Length: 464
Image (cartoon, rainbow, N blue to C red; front, side, top):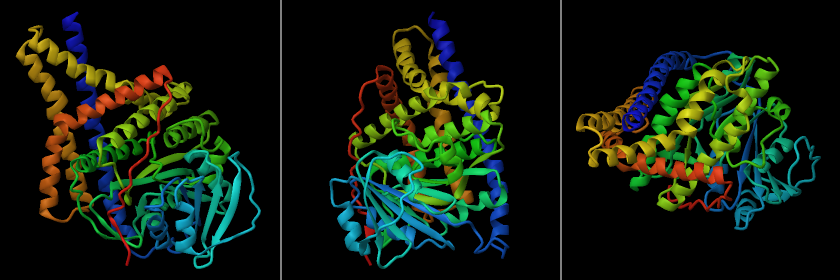
């Protein structure tokens, strides 16, 4: 029995790291093509000023610290035609008051077409200084309900969901819309999320890129590089992306409404919608594409304390569990394609059940080694697979970032990130595996999850 458990865990880690290495290869090939397209896009082209109009939806609940900077960052986007719809989801703080003060809001009577059911809307406001800005004030119903209300109020064929604690780069919309211009079957695109902690933003403008001083935030910088650059980019190359971050995604409104909008009774509404769109389009035999675009960057504040980070990761794992459990028919479906035959099984065995085998693997090998049940050679092989290859993969994510984007310009940035690439695998990843395991157990027990407040410092924001 001891030999079986040991071999099973080793094979699991070999398979996991093998998939990561394959995704890394796919990402590298994709980045080569993207770099070539980037050079072409820098030349004058026919799409300039002809891009489809976009509705930018900003759901906000208790975001008085960051909402003004987020709205200003959207207002300064270099895009031909867009509207901004902030949805105040029954905030208990001064979110609505900040919006009224900063943007001169006035009551605005308009026809509100209900295409998706939501909690009641209390009022609609329009900015006297920025005609493209409207604010919906509604009863609390959660982020998914807020996005559905924003979709109801939107006027344009594409909508972009942006978190209320996020900052977009000026050309983000221009870049994230490019796949829609290339492919008429495109229904969703998503951009890269980066940690804003340590950066400086003045009235919505990102003026300085820097690294956070908080160690937890630094670990997340490395984690995000790996997750986006060779995780989602690799899956995108085979149309197998199952997650587009709720912090920054562009959607074809018609497709989302047809699929039923955001599901309100789930924690991970962003992933659930993407998986449902895959399933819906394949069941109806409709051609479609869902693509990750690495160039457009959205900067967001990440947790800097253990309790907030724990709540976030537990919530993410529960959202993953709900999303997969709601769409089992997609897995190994004869029409499932890459999402059903590769991406969905990967999510089940390596992301959903991953914390059981990962955390359990550490516990088993430490116990078995000190109990004399396995040799030191077997223990060393496990450490190489679990930690050594983890460092290699994180380092490759940093290398891809430096070669392709070079967002962190100083040598000390790279030196510090390289240090945390190493340190991340000596406690942080294991702690994450434990939190994910907690989230999985909570979902299995159907225990009510306390959402927990995301502590916003907003220290990266400055007023001009």
